[in-house]
Image 1 (spheres, rainbow, N blue to C red):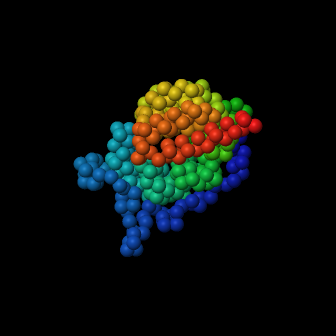
Image 2: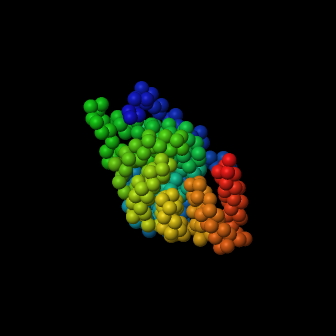
Image 3: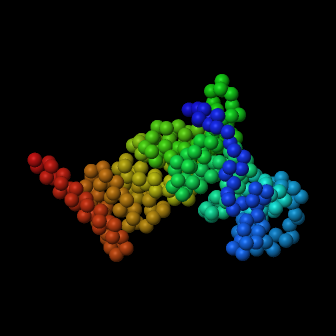
Length: 332
């Protein structure tokens, strides 16, 4: 799949994506009083900056970014953000600083500041692969699927410019794994599971230890009714992140599809209460046409939580109707 072909002749316009409230020359924004706000006032959210008063001041953008990366590697996101903002104040048109700030706010699910920082990065450097990818992730979180897809494709297209047409493999360890993962999610949402699985495999070739991509590939297999392969991917994901709730939930659904109901219950109870676990297994049994067993699980869910789990009652009523319809159909 040569994604770059679509974008090779589309010139990137410098500054086109810079948000309107940002000045072209730097990072100052307007406060409600009309006064310009500094980068720290705009982007810093964390411990009081006095906590870092004893730290040396970065002498260059590169040094500030490096110190921020080191703090992030230690797990101190607040200090990392402090250094990134400091780097931005040293060089107001640093796309790298904006990108790092945007990434950090995206990880914190602070969508407004993530968008502001990433759009600023792209306004300065429209071909920035990391910012394009992160912007795609943000748009995906906002359910803006078409725009997310465009950003992911642009990121991949920019990366593929490094490779010649004669090269069979057009990705390496530097390629944007999250962009391929995002394209896989979008393909799955469109029902194109084969295409989605190829995107996920490419993402995993770039970053084999990505638990979320392994989970996504597993779920794509699940959508294709490839239960064994799906379960294998979910277990690989959990080996990397043992507390990954979505992978446990998906693994439980696979076990239920395989009629391994005790294993399904054990997996689901890792991430939900027992009543909901019984309800979810009952729902899978209902989908598989195993109505009598579905009734047992729904009734058990009601016994475990008669007040707080009305959904089980709805499902029980529904499966009883399906069971009756099946009996009537068989009697014709």
